[in-house]
Length: 93
Image (cartoon, rainbow, N blue to C red):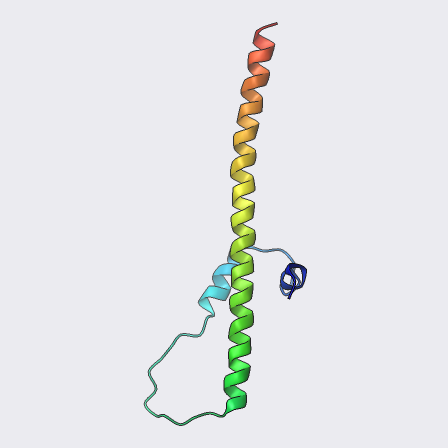
């Protein structure tokens, strides 16, 4: 699956922290079972695919939000440097 396809898995197409937190909260929690009755291979296969898709989307959301945070931090730092350089240049005139 390409990154474009993974990005298209979201309803709005925009990665948000709220969606990331909702998907993490929706992860299946392991629980102790009192019986050992198998549910069949189809159920296990479908649940495995659903969990795999959810984990892939969580990874894509984390990566997207990390990249956005990095761009914000580096962009802010560069803006400060540009502002200081402009101020120093203007002051020298």
